[in-house]
Image (cartoon, rainbow, N blue to C red; front, side, top):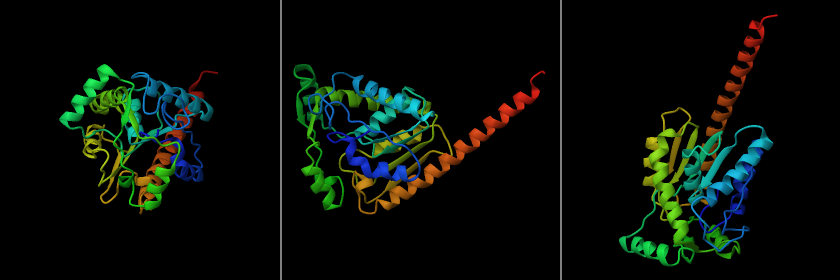
Length: 265
């Protein structure tokens, strides 16, 4: 699930990484983003982003024959967390990249948001995403600015949806019972990384839960200089997840054989 103002195509290199491991990948653009319809940076209601994601995710799961791992970055990481905490579908795992689990809003900004929510909830105001703080790699900033599918808008309605998702995700974090990997920028100027720390601290204790913080990285850690470190950490987690899955499948086969052996003739 991609972030605010962008689209799923910006993660083609991440998809290729998983493809090289033998994993299938599916991505979609949120409403009001990328190639999807709707006013830029808006959502019709609080349920649209999650219900759209559920349709895509459940169809993908049925085609795979198993529960996929859900990946989300920034705003997409927030809604991936909301998806997991809401128990919307069985998940094979959860990967959150610089999730927007806490956002920095001044008192004035909160007052303006409240006013716009009443007067013009669908109006697309500037979203405040500064391209220079996405990555230290100037090529990333240049490509972002030139991308015709990128926009710089957010409606009061979408911001309300995000704030509600933040509150729900933190409150329900202890209910998440799937392996969770969080990879977080240490010098994030776009979201407050402390929200990731707080969310992770509330998860159930598990050997398969990991939090990695890259101290000098800007927001888009998969597009940063030195991103190989991030991919290495993801690879290590994926290998561990595959071992857990293999062990579970072997145990299930043994249980099935035991049940057959005990069945009456």
